[in-house]
Length: 456
Ligand code: PHE
Image: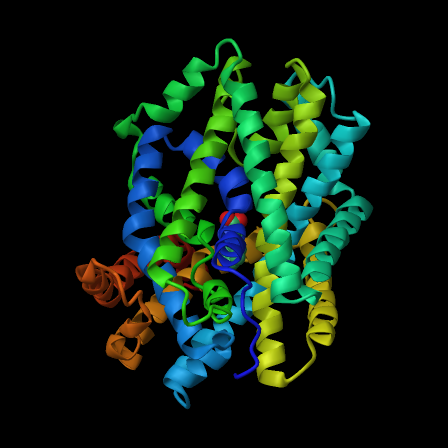
């Protein structure tokens, strides 16, 4: 498309893409998954999977985006038009639609917790049981859950409506540096507390006896979700790259920043958790149960608590806008709608779709699909199925159907490491699809066995 909008600067693009990658996956999920999987040993496996799986697929998505300058559906139409491969694009857009609907519910909680920490209603909660009770009551309240979910969606829509340069890029350039500053402040606060050393040791000293097949699978799945891969978010962001931008270089930066924030989030959380003699194995509630209790006991706790939830909100927002942009890019590119109309209509539909997820922790808690609440169903469907399937077919389609010879020139022409290109080609053709296939199979094995047992 001749008049396609482009990122204003390379730095703006890297910050926006890093903003997509850095999200609840890093600050909320990574610490608790690490906490329940043996600390440093898990981090080690996570790092390996970022390099062998995450980086090649990240490059592949950016290559497809810049090469075609299209949304995911348009991109696959161009590289594999008229064939069934087009479904990979549709699958991506649908994933964006689904993920945003429940992601926004958690994004809403972060707004609710900012309000709670400012008004002081969670100050002074010394034990986690009390904090957990408050959290349960809060997420079970249908009005508050929906209100904050709508507010989160409205924030995403406000930014995306303004477009790439004046919306997504502008806000990422403000929010991402802020995120780093807050994160550093929280780390300094955490590690200067008495007793924090134990937390640092937990995070740095690997205990490989805790590593099981399941923790390896979690590390692979986690790296994928955290880097926003498998649904065309990076295809979409890549489609606004200009010809001069260097993909390898940018991809390295995005992956580096995302990984850095995951690790830093661990440093911000575990030292405080240990300093306060709390358990690192709290699971998904780690942030919402443990953190208020941690802050309640530290000097200037309320101030740092507000900062912490602002950090979570920023992380969620810059990811939410990338999810919405995938859907909006499809509608504007393929259906010819104006950006404004696409954002308003699609944003509203996603908001409506999120309502059952918002109610999953309260009034709709008993409504289940295949044994899961609506929220868990959406989460599982996308993270365990749609993203790995999407990633698998992105690699196969680029590596085998379209052919790497047609796209390899998209990689930095002046790179001194020509062999890096060949390494990437090898990864995308053989290694990534193989790993994804195995991961996917392992992840769904239990679900399939359960389903078969039900049928027979
Ligand atoms: N990467 C985001 C996170 O870590 C989630 C996300 C997944 C965003 C897929 C966009 C696409 O929270």
